[in-house]
Length: 87
Image (cartoon, rainbow, N blue to C red):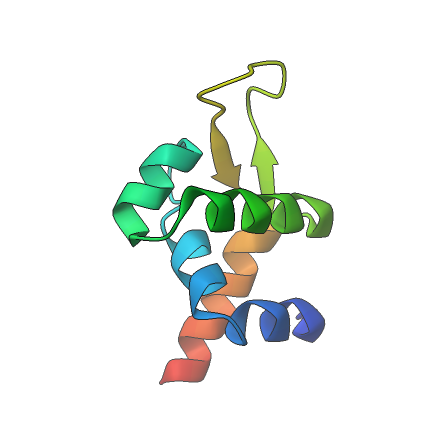
């Protein structure tokens, strides 16, 4: 079943769309910032929101810097649904 609330959450922000779309492999917030051109603070805030909603997980939560994040199965489903909507 599609979580339309999460599709809407991502769809209404270009920043969130950009960030979620680059999480195809484990990546640090700094690298996300470089790839998307977004400020690190915006990336960090979005990652926190994504974790709360189950879209992203932190693979190295005990690290102070250079944490690695990846998209979850739910996050992939949301991106897939958004791609369908574009067509």
